[in-house]
Every structure is written in C-alpha cells, then in structure tokens.
Amino acid sequence: MRILILCHAFNSLSQRLYSELGARGHQLSVEFDIADSVGEEAVALFRPELIVAPYLRRAIPASIWRQHTCLIVHPGIVGDRGPSALDWAIQEGEQSWGVTVLQATGELDGGPIWASDGFPMRVARKSSLYRHEVTEAATCAVLRAVERFSAGGFVPTPLAVAAADTGVRGRARPLLRQSDRAIDWRRDDSATILARLNAADGFPGVADRLFGEPCRLFDAWPEDTLCGGAPGEVIAWRESAILRATVDGALWIGHVRREEGANANAKAFKLPATQVFAAQLAGVPEAPLAGAANNFAAAGRSWQDIRYEEAGPVGFLHFDFYNGAMSTRQCQRLLAAWQWAQQQPTSVIVLMGGRDYWSNGIHLHSIEAAESPADESLANINAIDDLAAAIIGNERQLSIAALQGNCGAGGCFLARAADLLWARAGVLLNPHYRNMGNLYGSEYWTYLLPARVGVEGAQAIMRNRLPMSAAAGVTAGFVDACLAGDPDAFRVDVARRAAELAAAPDLAERLHAKRVQRQGDEALRPLASYRAAELAELQRNFYGFDPSYHVARYHFVHKTPASWTPRHLAIHRDLGWSVPR
Image (cartoon, rainbow, N blue to C red; front, side):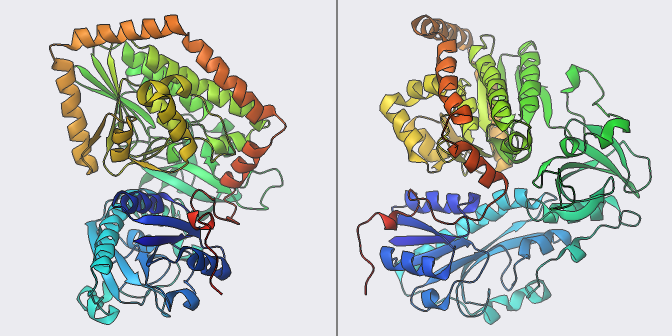
C-alpha cells in the first residue's frame, strides 16, 4: 500500500515504523506536521491508502481524517487519553502499561481501537522506556493494525467498549504540568523524586533550582552508599554528574538546562551538570569511584558511565553516555578504559555501549557550548578518531561491538572499527553524516566502509540518509549478525557467542589473520592517511565558507521546530504528480 507517515519529527519510533513497514513492501512517504495546509498538500500529492501518525503534538485536521483512515499511535493503555500518557504512568508507579492504535476522529484520543499491545513497566527514564518497551509495543500494534486494514472487513472497537476492562486506569488525564512534577526536597523521598525525574526525562525536564539558579533537571540515577548533607544540597560530583542529597539518601543528576533568561551568559540547552555549574562546584568534593581497575570496575548502584567486567576469557566494556553523545573528555576516558582492558588476560573484548544507545558520535551540545565550536568540533573528532584507531590496531584480542541500542553517525563507524559488529533486532543504525549540514565525517569510515560493502555500497550508504535496521545492515554487509530482539536475551546471546569465540580452536589463527590483514592494509595505504584526508574535508565543514554544519548543529541543539520536511523523506514532492483540482 501507499502509506503516509505523518509525524511531528522523524524520531526513533517513526524511524522504526518506517523501517518495518518498508521491509514489508509498502511504499512510504513522510510529512512533518507543520501546518494543516502542509498535511493536506501531502495527502493530495501522495494519495495514500492509509495514514499512520506515530508521533504528533496536535490533532490531525478534520479535512484529512474525514477523507482518509488515520491511525494514531497513543503511548497509553486502552482508554487512556491525553498528551502525558507515559509521564503519568511513570510518575504514578504503574506496574504495566501499553500502546494503543486508534483511528483519528473529532475527539482527541477518542476514536475506535484498531490494535493494542502491553508491557510490564520497569524503573527507568521515560526516554528509555519510549525507545524500548513503547517502541516494541507500538511496532507490534501498528503492524497488526495495518494488516487488518489491508485485509479489509475489520471493524475497529469503539473506545467505550474497548476501555471497559481497564476501569479507572484507562481514563482521560490532563497535560502533566510543572506544578504536578514539582519536587519538595525537604519531604519527598528518593523513590518519589526519581519517579518525577524519570517521568520528565527527555522532555520537558523538572523545573527546579541549583545553586540558586532556575533550571530543568534530567538524567537521574540512584545512589546506594554516599549520603549526608541537607536535603536538596549538592554534596559531591563525579565526571559529568552531581550528587544531590535527599531525606533518605541521594540521587545523581547527570544533565541540566538553565532556564531561558535566567543568566545572560547561560547556554539555554541541555548540558552535563558539571559543565553548567563548573564554577559553583569548586568547593564541592569530588567522589571518584573507589576500588581497583582504574575506576572502571562495576561499582554497584552508583552512577557510572564507563565500567568493565569479565567473564572468564571475555571482557565487557560498557559505556552508557546520555543520548549516545561522546564528548572529547568521554572519548579520552573511554580510550583509557579500552587500553586498560587490552592489558587484561582476555582473548575477546566486547564493546557493549549502553542500553539505549551504543554511540551517536561527537557531542553536539558540548560543541555548541564551547567558546569556539569549530575548535571543539576538531578536538572531539580527533578524540573519537584516537579511540577508533586503538580499536582497529588491537592485535591481542578479537573485538566485538554489541549494539544493544540505536547507533548513529560517527558511532556507527566506531562500532565498525571492531572485528565483529552484532546488533540487537530492533536496533536502528543511521550510518551517515549528511543530515548534520553535509558533515563529511571521520572515524576512518573511508577505510572501514568500502572494505565491508565495496566502493559502490559505501557510496550508497553515505548518500542514503535513511535509517537502517539491524536485518538490513546484515543484508548490506555492514552488520555481521542480527541477534535476539529482547534486550536481556540479547546480552545473554552476546555473552554466549563471545565465550564460544574465545574457546574456539581456531582463535590463534583468527588473531594471526587479523594481524596479517592489518599489516597488508597498512603497507598498501597507512591508516594515518585516511584520517588526514577525512580531517582535511572536515576542516572545510568546521572553518570553511559554508556554515551548513554550524547552522544544522545550532538547530539540532536548540530543537528548532522544522519548517519543512526533508526531500529524502517526503518522496511525494518528487513523484511528478499534480495536486487534483
């Protein structure tokens, strides 16, 4: 069928549905919901048989839903209505939740039900639940609804009938406002505060004050051992996070955003907490991780963005960076952890990344906040290149990049620097840079990508600008294996396969072949020359006359609303059809 995806932005859920529907042979086009007239024009041009709306911030106009079946993806159980479904569920401690696919009508979230799917809730940030449980449930429900529509004859269930079993849980609820999210540090316990911060993570954050300044709080993590100080007081810091006392313990806060107008010199976008309040933390004690292993050993339930663990001959290096962004400092620290892990008595090292993201490459927010974004861009690229070079040059162990979560831009090629790349089914890769102002990119992609997919395949991937599923990555030759979709099952599968490689009788031969291949490649063309050529192109992006990269980064960081849909998504604008009169 021709299916139009109408969405506020091409977010992770929209991309997943785009990939899944495309893999099933549907012809797809995307339109951002910018204005009623824009949506109406898209419908007139594409003439869709069905409209799917996975992520909207306002109602579809009657001029569209009266003429076409429009399936709305609502991140709530059957009967739940309102714009803050998942926020309320997290903040109120729901034990189970779900996703409902309903038909657009004149009543917001009140149309008949085409499909639904449920999941158990875990204690996690809203953004994490959205990227995992919500996305998986939405994918199952949307595919079921599309099949029902395609087959014909299905009669969706009226909301009142479908919601009867959910009782008070499935009800209309208002927008969750900052007054509902407010934290009373003198009274609220850690669990209550964590639930409020988790419910607001990603957007909009919780309005609060730090060091007397109004700001929004994000990225919370519980602390089991460190405590003391008056509730609400910042009692310690570690790398990019600060530790704040509660009435019964303490919580780490990883990211903050100063309020607009609060400080004339403030950067009013989300940044690491210690970066925003560096001056105020001068008198606050640092709380480095205790123990051996260069502070990379797992430290229980305490905030730790890099940790290392071993299972026999296999080492696992975890790096859980918020939103997958890797700053210069984080790349340098991860390089130190990698170099330390190489010296351990293992034969396989697995680069696990984080649950939500493996890596999205350089840290655009930290770059935007720098005194010279161009200089910081170059420093960040060099730091991630150093890490990629170290992974490529490792001769002692087999290296595996195990993608639990999504991966984008330079993160994709950092993952490809490993000997093997395994991805969880459901993971999305965006192995290209052009969406960021035609950024050329580095991470040795000009060496790594053609070797895997050929010159023409590499050119196709870099031009594509569309998400790639794990299965499609295997087909293209970019990914070596697509493993279990369930995150826990994926980790078990990765550990088993890595152990089998470590115990395989041909391990020594594989390591020898790896060394010979690298030496042959180096003799043919030194690795340093690939880097030099990539950096020469990037110099133009960072310092040249074309400001596209800097403009695109600014709009990305400041979340500027889209004013048009990119043409590679809105194919209906290139079909050559005319709008019917």
